[in-house]
Image: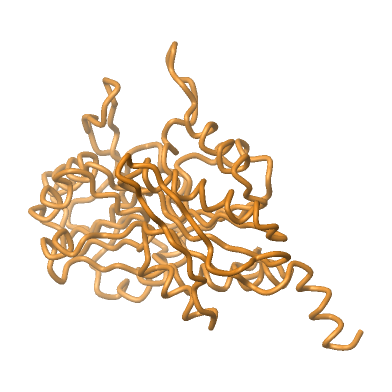
Length: 330
């Protein structure tokens, strides 16, 4: 088959039309630069009654559209903006619409673990589909079963691939490193970090005792005395679990501590709480925008790795109908 014909077969959905909500414009700019395209122009207007209005500057009929919108705080503003933009593209006859949600809100509400409670993650998935998304992309869901809440295809990517490369580069600086999980729920994913670094593991055992963000670290399982410790987790919200894990490790005789996580949610006074901890480096990604004033609290100890090249490559492959898994030898 001639090259031009093969490319035509791959690009059945038309050219890439990249849109951004207002939640994370810096990330959208980086992705656009990687792809070599311009962000499509749109108006996002908030009326005095807090209602949102979106208008596209040009037609997307028959095009392959991608909307980048993380759903971190302000959660409900960002979520509604995403939903309205998806519907706007659908009503303008886009050929295919992909919702790119680096951080998916309500992901922790993924099951009925007590009577008379909702499964809000399922509701969010339903709303994204009803609004008009044909596909979705996201990073590191809190629980794997959330993928089953969607009936549309999607790509659940992982910040692990970025974080592990950085850790491998600084591995030689560490003394007898050990990977420590902030809680037992992350143990399976933490094993991947221990495997690529070829180091042992330890575990923080904690219990959540109420319907809030508070949990108590009870004990540490494993050996950390005279070891550098790499604490890994998927998301840091209030910072309580990380703070307890750091203090517990230091109390048990750990040397330098590195904290590694994908989603830097940093709610309320989380950044201030973490910044005073005896941690050598905080290593995260930019799935969630971190305000400059919070970054300043950490100084040079905060390392933020960009997901833009990874996200850009996945968009390119999706547009051309090529495998995403082969990027990770899967």
